[in-house]
Length: 343
Ligand code: PEP
Ligand code: MN
Image (cartoon, rainbow, N blue to C red; front, side, top):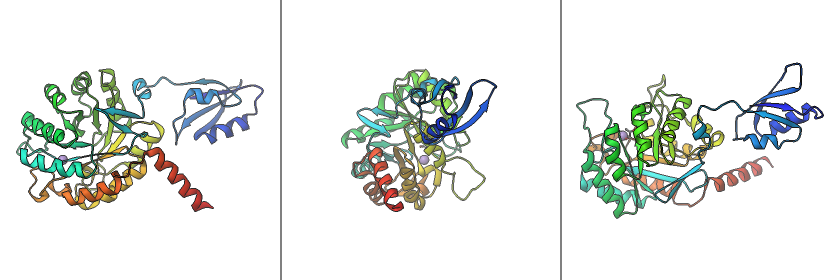
């Protein structure tokens, strides 16, 4: 944004007020009035807030490439459950793939007991190899729905192709777009038109701006709301399956004020790192977590090494999701902690 300082105002004083709002401020003079180029780096600041600053004359805003997303609320409601900055953190958990009716039923009981609000599970599975298990499709969706209803949970599940959107939207409360399909525009258009809110996973090699542009597609085509899901990006380091980009999460939550959940399971690819990454994600401001779990991880048909046992899920759920505190409350507590650390 470009700010013009009022002719009678002291530019240094105006600059200080802008910096205090959490803005980068760069002065440039074009021979007329004093102007500042400003950019928010640690907080969302609106044009109206800038106009209210003493000494600020005009505020020019560059046209956004994501106007609908700019107006998107920080929290959205999915079948009665609120997800976002103003709501208690939300846990989504379940198997990588819904493998059998009994298995899904048993897991749903553990998932509900861990404090989760959503049962996740793949029915249509994006697999790297065509020889790997591809999912049970519509049948798996019916298992997920029945198990979720029995345990007071909601369903989140993935559609990989426009032709799958209608059936997934029929059974799921939240429609998932997977990492491999983040930029599949026919799929984004179909998902938006389904009328369901969408969980949009980040493409494993996508920038944050590309991710946001895909979210804009969904909104433009009718999605009532979007939840972004960071699931790790491909980096130069193969020590974990992907690199969990918590910087992007902090930016999206604190600067763009969007609902973001974090999936540490696909990022780490190994269950021993999931508790630490989960804590880190919540500390950064995530609205919740998506975690993979399996009754017998060693026998899972997909992603067994990253699946939490029901016991691990219960422990993590108890630690992070059973205290009904909102992010706003947590931030107040953290601010109080840092004040007492300084005094
Ligand atoms: C999943 O959540 O089931 C999945 C396949 O994840 P991703 O799209 O992030 O790889
Ligand atoms: Mn998986």
